[in-house]
Image 1: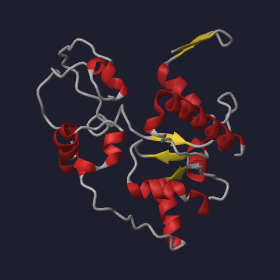
Image 2 (image 1 turned 45 degrees about the vertical axis):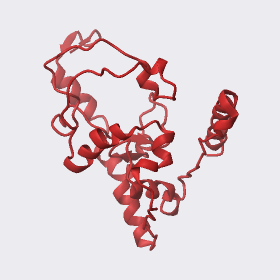
Image 3 (image 1 turned 180 degrees about the vertical axis):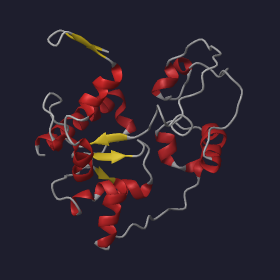
Length: 219
């Protein structure tokens, strides 16, 4: 609802939304400017880009990447595997009686250091499949214009169906400049040597921020 003091009347919700929605031909803007991963992948395939992903012989138990990001065998086998197999979260008991992360001898994931009392509620979980009308995992990357200046260039962004990318989607983003030359991609190494300890971690954060700033400045 909007109170229009100039016209001296109250504008209801439906009229207000219709007025805003018809200020510009937003549908045409999106059709012309918005990029999607399927479009990028199609363009790369037309250029005979090779999408084959070379998998190594590493098993889940000894994959150093899972260890680096703090995933335990329990999380992989009881949480991730059922999600990959059944496209839904696995059922399990409520609560967590494991030791506090702050007392652990090994590094833990950031969110594991925050605990709260458990509360049973009747609301369903945030679900982009069953609650698609109100919730979505879609996110947009790329240059974002001035929100106070409405024009079609603000739609010139890349829409991702989810922040979690498949290997093929990751490959498409890495090579997007082959299809859209005005899009530049920079790869930044976020690893550091464990032997350097806390100072090495802090130095790596500074290096990552500097590299990201330089990439943005360079366009």
